[in-house]
Image (cartoon, rainbow, N blue to C red; front, side, top):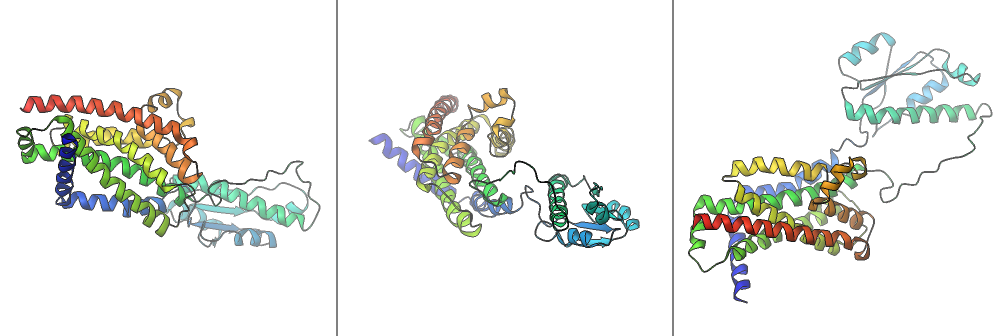
Length: 374
């Protein structure tokens, strides 16, 4: 009982110390509010206000219909230009797409021929050009097919593919990006806060005060883990409620309580990683460099940005040892698909096992560091 009282009081000390660190407080608020909002609304996964121009050499009812099919929010209102202005406009970067409708296009369509439309794309705008290419093809094909059906019989395909998008019917990048950025902030802040808390003790000389007290390395480390973990849990839960659900209006299908429980288990592992990195780094700049090496693989290869199935088998196997891989799978299952504990219990079990290993490694390293300072 005496041990846990020490852990509690040391944790309260950590919370007070964090409260006096204005830079860390600003970082926490920014990461869970502004950063979540900007990342969710700025993802290039869907086309938004892409500049487009049309060279109409046909001046027919069909060409006018195609021009009018492009409108906000996916595209800006199309600019109608002549063929001589096309190349200079593309060279100047004014338009991402320029559609060139040839002469006699409507006549050839009604005659049953297959005329071509030239689509010029500024491929230096990678995200817009890659996504917009398929958008424009679908729009043009849809308008041509609908127009032709109104004038003659059109042979239809024997099978019609009916697409139904589950869990995100509008394919909104905001729904996906906001939750993934929240998960990234949870991982980042938990590692930074615990690592910085240990380095702060060393830089301010207060670690020597702790060494002369009847405290064990386990108590000192456990206090930092629960205190910093509590801060992240509270702020992340508030961000989920007020920013993700409130401001961004992202519907949450599953239990927020179950997600918070999974987040707490995840923080058990990541805060332990922060302690370990705090023992390796000797200053805050060194911790920052270590964060780059650790955070990038955790965020890029955990399945939050790219499906794990698209990665090489070796990477998939290695990332199974990372807590973020299981936390991303857990969060997506609960928040997007409404999964209950009977579905996500393997992720909980994996996080507990990984967290236990990281905690023991960090504790062993922390004991060696304390012994060298005594």
